[in-house]
Length: 346
Image (cartoon, rainbow, N blue to C red; front, top):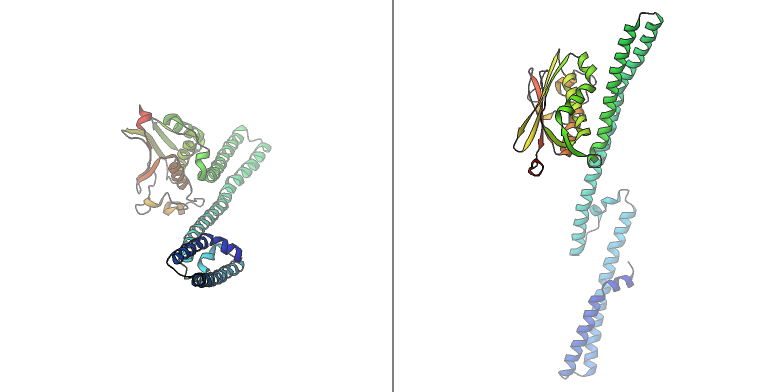
């Protein structure tokens, strides 16, 4: 810190002292003090003021030099607030406290970003392992189809092989959708379009998309959704698709899914109810947590616990409440509650 910069910073203080010296000189002159005594008083005042300014300047220069030295030797410079030298100056202590609080916020933000980055990396790694399975299945089916064609076993076997390839391809498409929506879920507001959405048509589209998969797993679906809601249809398709696939994934034997709606004065409620294995009571509050698979998930090698987590995350962005009710061994009901605005309802 340069002396000229320090004096410039103390300009108002110096100006105040000069004005006060002028006022005191005038007062002493009027009260009869001779000029020599007045000059002596002013010189003493100036010496005391200069000495005080020099001492304070030396202290401030030492403080900032030490702060600069600490900063130059720090690998993580955002920790400066924790290592600043002690000071008797109240402003220094207040600034240090504010820097510490600011740095704490930055450090917490950095940790959250690192955690999100690590979570994303782990999810991509698990996703790669998941998507390898249907790709390997497709390769084997194609190889078997070639052998069947060479053996001239007829078109039926080839047709079955093509159907199986289509099912495996559908699995890949679902995995790709999941990783894309996971990547976009942080910034839903950039990629959504709210409009009136017919729930009957939306649910039927999801069922049609997975028709062969549902038939293969002997799933019966009963749809009675007579209400329309205002939401993003594309994101809604993904959410419903994940919920239905989850029901099929954890079913035992034939599965029946009943999808219906109910209107209340303030909301439209969509129920997706199945008669699957259900969820244990102690695990129910955690099914929407990232990576949670529970006892049912541990019996499935490719279960990642990301499907329902993504559903809750997207529902939160769209203003939809999602919750679950279940009785172990009897089935599960996923409930989506869409708020209805009084303005829209008119």
